[in-house]
Length: 143
Image (cartoon, rainbow, N blue to C red; front, side, top):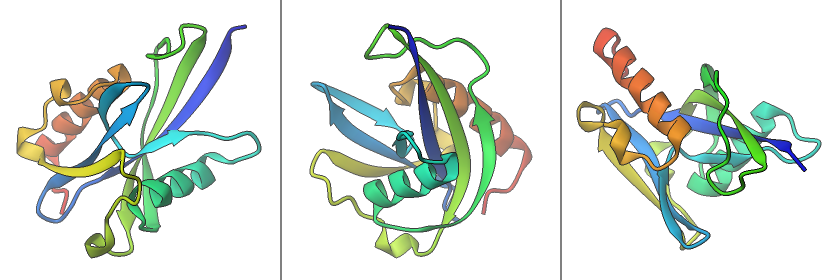
């Protein structure tokens, strides 16, 4: 059965111009991606964003702004019968010093925006988002 799989991710950029990525083990693979994950039945998109962020980083989103939504067909990396729709938000959190992962399979990693390259990320849509982020960084201050 063909179905949609909706994913919601947060993009955190620190005042030191670093972007937060996660490295996590999933189905025997190491994934480097933006923090976030799957929408649950009955959950709104923003509720999903906040829940996934809290689960992966132990912090609370205090402000968010839409950044990107998938604009093309993307088959799931893991299930060929799923079409992925990913929604990305730029996020601001309550306390950078509280960032941590309580899940042993998830590592939080900061990468300098100046060194961000699409190849650093595992998932195809994340690579598109990284390109878009790199373009915007050239034109804006992300402090």
